[in-house]
Image 1 (tube, rainbow, N blue to C red):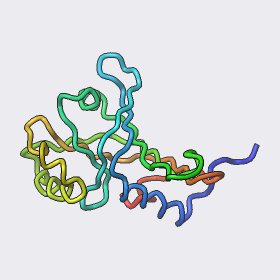
Image 2 (spheres, helix red, strand yellow):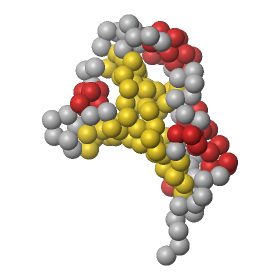
Image 3 (tube, rainbow, N blue to C red):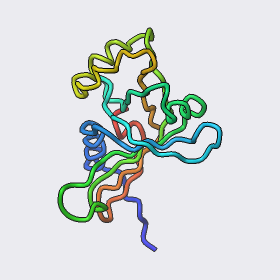
Length: 160
């Protein structure tokens, strides 16, 4: 059987970085609080000024409660285009640990201002007391760049 994972090259790095930089939402996988069962939900996605993936979450949501108990998570980004088989379009799975940034934390307000540039509608709730940011501290990433283009990347490959 042929090796499925290709050596990571600059094209793979650029594709992965581009997926992070252009993502506006993604599928967040967590372990459900109380059961440990896998749970996936859609979240808005942006980046910090340094390019680290981030989302804004409500403390009332199931996925936030899950991340508070177990910070291990996975974030899938990359959307299919308008034409063709959805599985031929690039996607990136980030394996990460969640790090919370709450009201009153250093850099929270600067991150909020940056986040609002790409997610202006979140102005309606960004300052609600139950909302906080989750930064994704990436340990590893799986890039599927299309047919026969599978890569494993580390944080350094993503500029993180």
